[in-house]
Image (cartoon, rainbow, N blue to C red; front, side, top):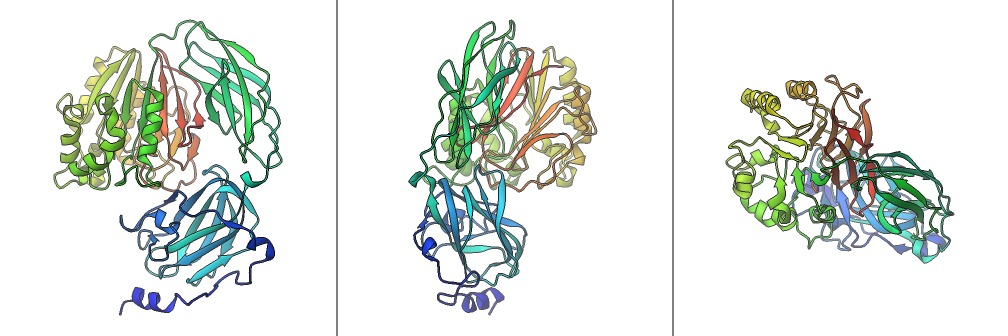
Length: 529
C-alpha cells in the first residue's frame, strides 16, 4: 500500500474539524455559501481531470489537485461581488497543507492575509470567526503535509454579499485635471473618493460616454484625434456597485500632428486546453477583450497553445477564441510550440504562411511609421539546446535596412523578469542589439504575469534612451506568482488580461485591460527614439 493510499484511508474522519472546531456562532449560522460554482483559478493542476473549478462545484467526489512535489501553490475563487467573509471551510483530499494561509482581495491583485495555519493535519479545516471583506479569496499552501501536492474536495467561503445591504454611494471625485496632452492622448488624474465600504473603481467619461474603468486615480486616454476638443468627467463605484455622481467636467484640446494612428492587441501564453463551456477557462475572455479593441493587428508573444501545441489542440482550443483574429495575427512561437512530436509542426500547420512570411519563424513587418520585428527566442535559450546565431545576424541586417522612425520587437523569453522564470542571461546579445538600435518597445511572454518596465539600458538600469519592456504572459494559461520587482519595474500584477497598444507615427502608449474590461495599468505616452 502506498503512502497516498494510507493517507486517503486514515484522514477523512467523518465530521472531523481539525482547526477552529467550535460550533458556529449565531452570527456565522446566518451566513450563506458564497463560493459555490463561482470561477476558480489555481497556480497549477496535476492534470486536466483535476481543474480548480472542481473545488467549488459542490461535489465531494470531484477535486482540484496541484502539481505534485512543489511549494508554494494556490487556489483562488472569485465570489462574483464584494462580500463580508466570516468563514472558510476546507475539505482536504489526502494531499493536504500543513502550513498555509487564507488571503482576501478586493481586486484580485492586492491580497491581505486573514488567517494563517501552521499545524494543519488534513481532513476538514473549518476556519470560523474571520473578519474580512473582499471579492476574491485565495488559499496559499506553503508547506505540504505529504510528498504529493495540494488537493481539495471542496473550498467553501461563507459570509454576506454586499449587495444584500449597502446602498450608500461613494463621494463625488474632485480635482480632475489633465496632467499631459499629446496629439493622440490625454493623461488624467483626480482626488480619490471616500465610501463607507470602500471604493472599487472609477468610470472615465469622455463626452458623456464611459470609455474606461480603472482602479487608480489616474488614466491615460489614448487613440484620440489630433486638434480635437474633448470633455472629461469621472465617477466613483464602490464595492457594492453604488455609483457616485460625475465630477466637475474639464475640457481638453489635443495637439496637432500624431498622424498614422492605429491600435494593436497583444498577449502571450494564451490557450489552455479548455473552451467557453468551462466558466474558469480564460482565453475566450481575453479574446473578447481583444475584439473590443477593434485592433488593426494582433500580436502574440509565444506559447499560443498548451500543453504540447499539437495541431489538434490549436484547432480545438486556440481557434475557438483567438482564432477569430487569425487573418490579422502576427504570431511568434514560444517553448510550448517546440513540445510537439515534431517541434513547431502544429504551430506552422495552423498558422501557415502567417507564421513564416519570410521563410523562417522570425520575420519583420511594417505599419505606418513603425517597424515590427517578430523573433523566435527559442534560438536564444541555449539551455534548451537551440542556439542559432543566424537569427542574430539576420536581426542586425534587418535593423540596418529599416527606414521607419519607430521600432518594436517581440519574442517569448524576456531578458528581465520578476516572475518564476526570472532573467534570461542567454539573451544578453539579443538585448544589447535591440538597445543599440534604439528600439522603442519590447514585448514578451513566458512568465505568466504582467510586468511593465521603465525604459532600460543593456544592464537593466533605468535609462530614457532604452526600450520599454512589457511582459504580457497573462493571455489565459494559469498564472504564476511574482517575486521582488526589478529596480526598473513600473508595474507588476499577477492577473489575466490583454494589452492595448496605441501607436502613432512618433509615439506609443500601452494599457493592460483586465477581464472585467477595467484598465489595470496605463503607461505614459512615449516619443519614439
